[in-house]
Image (cartoon, rainbow, N blue to C red):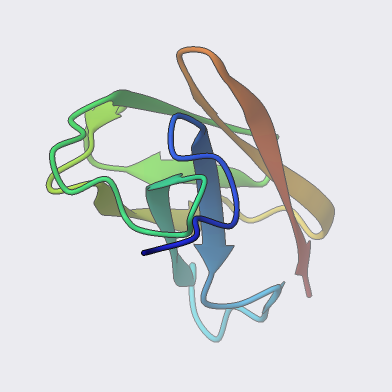
Length: 107
């Protein structure tokens, strides 16, 4: 007998950034965010191919296509600085999942 802790029908969008403080050493600097879709038990939804949109504030820009689709339940998206300094955010959205805000400090 197995007891499930959590809700197996729940879908949870998660996003993690490699860096929260970005210090450009030349013309710009790049950081990566990893986006995953998990079920209520914490497992990556390997068959998920949901469309992900990343919206950046002035100071950051997405490198490559936007929106993107999950591949095997996760994807990495690269962000670059645009020359402005200060606190900025990137917002990750997908379908019916609540948006995720990632905060960065550009030095």
